[in-house]
Image 1 (spheres, helix red, strand yellow):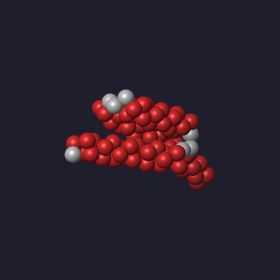
Image 2 (cartoon, rainbow, N blue to C red; image 1 turned 180 degrees about the vertical axis):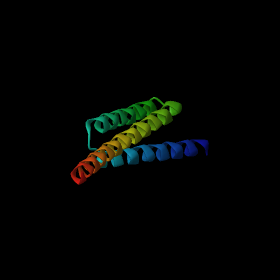
Image 3 (cartoon, rainbow, N blue to C red; image 1 turned 90 degrees about the vertical axis):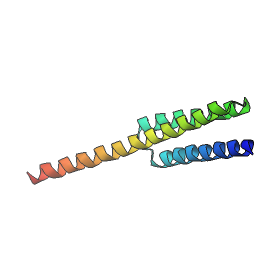
Length: 97
């Protein structure tokens, strides 16, 4: 029973991290986000290695790290988009003057 619960937690954490990474990859638009995606993928590989070594605490920690890196990649994507929009607004304002 406990083992099944642990496996479910692993699977949920892995799914959350993979989904975040996939979303970050879809929206990736700059070098900073690519760096964070690379770090996220590295953490996923480390999680796999920790799972093989039967270190459950480390596996969960690595999935968490991967998810966080993917979230940071998304933040960089949206920050870049926001900067582009601000530049366009500035250009529009200058044209009105």
